[in-house]
Amino acid sequence: MQLSPPLRAAAWSCALLVAACATHRTADDAEAPRKRPHAVRVFEAPQGTLRVEEVETPRAPKPRALELVEPATQTVLWAFAFDGKVDVLWAPDGAAFAINEWIGDGIAVLTVVETRPPNHSYLLNELVPQDAHVTDNEQVWVEGQRWVDPRHLELRVRSRGKRDPEGFERSLVYAVGGSVTDR
Image (cartoon, rainbow, N blue to C red; front, side, top):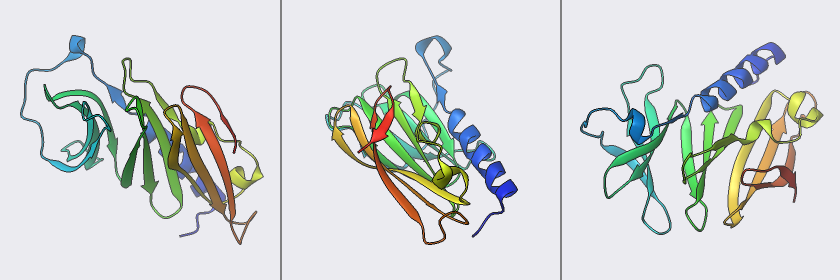
């Protein structure tokens, strides 16, 4: 599906807003105990001390959420509502994970979450170089590929549109909590 520049800008803004709506819960704002929803998919941390669960949620308009859960207590440490398809890539030491979220056919959003409080999250779409390959194409995908080591994520930026009708691809590396650089 090709989006016109105004629709692409609106979709991009919506994607950034969705990613920014991730929530963080602490013991101070914990709600009364409730039965946790059944996990549709589970992404275990390498050491098994944490996991990310994909759950169905009654929250409109997003039908699913990812929840960072401490299995021993079933405490939800962080939650992220979404409406596309997702995949989770854990860092080798379990100190962070990456969420690839595909929103329709023309946009992919990459978020990295640190698992240690205060559970900082970083929207990598905002950190990739905003050159003409990103700003002048209608379809843009920012996707995590693999963890190079516990603090560095290899990512790929792909785009296609009027600027690059045959497509464009670039490999980058993200330092957690820092910047995105060329690979």
